[in-house]
Every structure is written in structure tokens, then in C-alpha cells.
Length: 344
Image (cartoon, rainbow, N blue to C red):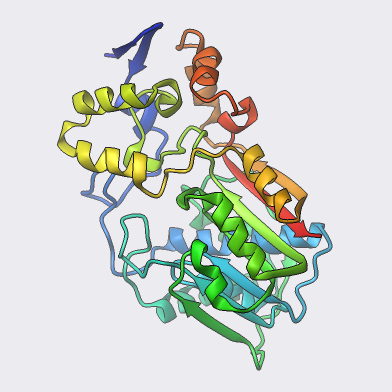
């Protein structure tokens, strides 16, 4: 049975299963949807996600004629550093640095504690199956719950041992990159939605870049359906956009009593805080000399459901644009953005 939450100009449907649980990727057995049970070992699904990221990077760069030979890469928010380490193995990159303010398990959204070398071994096992070509059909079985419509083209790779390749981890956040005191040819950031103050982020990226530096953001917008992530998503379709801040607090006090403190902390101050649109991000990037080379959007795997949800809401777009007048319909309906920029 669907309940309703009243707002000034109508009412919004509430249904945990229909509007949230049927859309979220499942968590570990025995855990609640907002508290994935930590494991000590990396899963096959997580391994698949890493390979997909690397494959998408190489595929998109190939389509844009971006050469990685002897280039230096910085991975912002690297987590366990698997993406840059794998790219060093299968591409012509010469050097890579991974930066992240959190170590494994330090934050609820960070990787669980695990053996990084063992994880690399698991990744190598899958890469061995691909022989000398990355083909999504080979590792697709490891992408059971991954949301993507960007199928990268097959890419030739070389897994032979390459000397003089360097990887280093730095415990630094995106706001502190100036401390690196080095410049990079390629800068990758998978989750800028987890970082606040994008003006300061781009200012720091500017410090560590040079002419023709490529920046690649893989980004799930706050304004998309699951923008607040599982930790602060409501049981109302696009509830984080249809409710204003006061209404969110009222809603949480009624429907998330057992974890209202954590919910509101994450929603207002946590790693899903940025309320900056993609258009505003691009404006900030332009200010520091970074111009768009390509933008690609992964359609959400659940889009057929969410489009139907809109019909359940009176004045859907009118309410959203009252609360967030700068956001586009494209961004509200988006899945994951792939944004590639080049410094002039």
C-alpha cells in the first residue's frame, strides 16, 4: 500500500520497495540497504567494475585520439588504487599517482579493508582470459549489478612486464593537490559528486596540470535519481529534488527515525553534498582553461521505471524547478556522466 507525504501544493507517494529497493544494487547478505556489510576480500563484482572503468577510459581516449604513451596520470579519489595500477599494466602510461583522503574502511562509502596485491591478482586472472584484447563480453558476467550503457569497444592490450613503471599513493584530498608539486598529462576522477567545493577542486587541478592536460570526470549527479546514494535516498521518487530542505527534515523524522541523524548528516554535510549542476561544473572548468572534448551519458538501467514514476507526481517539473531552477531535465534523468576536458 502506498502512503503519501503532504507538501504545500499536493502529496507525494511513498513506497520503499517500489521507489528504492527495486532500483538499488543489493548489499551483502544480512545487511541493511544503507549499511553494506564490510568484507575482508574484494568481490568479483567489484573486480568487474574496476576492469570496466579501465576499459571505458581506454576506449573513450582511443575515440578521441588521446595517446597515453609515456604519459603521467593522477587518479583523484583513487580508493585502493586499482584503476591506475591496472592501467599501468595494460597501457602505455609511464607513471601514475593515486590520491585519496581516506584509507580502506575509513569512511562508510570507501572500499572495505582488503589485500590490494591479492585484488591485483584477481584482476590479472580476468585479464588473462581476455588474452591480448579487452572485450566487455569476456568480463560481462562480473558486471551483474553495474549500471552502464557505455559499452567500450574492444581494445588491444599488452600485459607483458614493463620496466620503469611507477605507482605511488598519496593520502591527499582533491582540495590539497597543490602539495603534490608535480604536473600530469592525464587526470581522472571517478566520483566528483563525493567532493564539495568544486571551485577549489578545479583550482587545485589547475595547479597539477599543464597545457593539453586531459581531465576525465566520471560523475553521478546529485540531481539524478540516486544522487544522494543509498545512505540518504528517500522512499519518494526523486524525493531529494521534490522536497525542500525543511520538508526533507520533516520526512526523515517520520520515516527514518532509527537513523535520522546519520541520514541528515550525510545528506547535508556528507559525501553527497554538492548541489552543483553539470552546467555549473563546466563553467568552473572553463574559468581555469579546461574546455569540453566530449560528454557521454550512461542511461540508467532502471530508466523505464523512473519515467513511469513521473506520471505519479503532479506538477513534477514545476516543483523540481522551483527548488532547483538551474538543473536541466537531461541531468535529472541522467545515469552516469563521462566528461572529458582538455586544458588549452
